[in-house]
Image 1 (cartoon, rainbow, N blue to C red):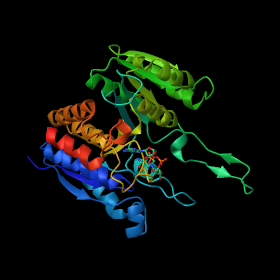
Image 2: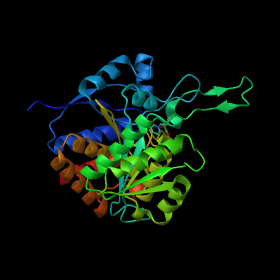
Image 3: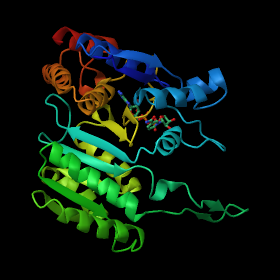
Image 4: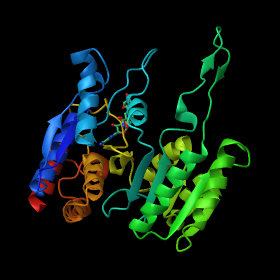
Length: 335
Ligand code: NAD
């Protein structure tokens, strides 16, 4: 069998440390990948004078599978978000953000298993038609929803639910106010739902969904929604299971997929050996599932579950007193 090559972008801030921890875990679990490293973000700007160099784009395209650390987008004029750029360039239309309760975290809930499927390239993040008047007193942004885009993400959500044996899909919208965009999304959601009679389909207005997620999160299984709502709701979901350190994300397109942590480069703790590598390790587990290496995915998830539940050398955000390297060591010992 040919060896799978993965493009690895270590990223900025805590990125290189948590990516290094994750590669050690993948190797120890016997995944037998080859890695090709690429720069993006501040690291790339300093070395190559651009945030996403051409070599990086080529490597992502060539290897199809990328594991990415968080990137810092410099604040200020002229820099568009690198993540948005990559999602558009590779048409990564689906963003899968699962959250799962782990025993041993300081989370408020114990039985959460929610998958947010976020449309990743349209909606309020289309970047289209943004104008600001000369005196800066007026700003406009355009939200774009197409039937094709909505159908693609909704079908993806139901197919994923079917594959993972999930029972319920909730389409989240604001069609009562945003009649054109959210209205179209909801209309298509109702049509797609009919094709999956074995899955329970519900719909919920986004503001109510926020309250329901806090009051009674166990009612949710798969949430499918447009870009901006998905961005916000998935962070809310991360909060239900112990915060951003526990939340991975997969960006899936027709040809390429990029796996990453939901959190950013955490400049406040960068270089201090304090970062919790769990989110990127969970992203790597998503990558293994995508590659249908489910036994390896299970092996790593079990080891992670054990380390977090036992509190053996866990990081501060998990209530422990240890750093990235000790946490990784505890995980490697169990593998
Ligand atoms: P952040 O997610 O980097 O940090 C928020 C808080 O969570 C900080 O207190 C940080 O210390 C903590 N934190 C984050 N990850 C952690 C981990 N693994 N272990 C322990 N604690 C952790 O958000 P921010 O400070 O708003 O953003 C910093 C930079 O990251 C910005 O430049 C932003 O653009 C970028 N960013 C990148 C991505 C990405 O590449 N996917 C996502 C979000 C933000």
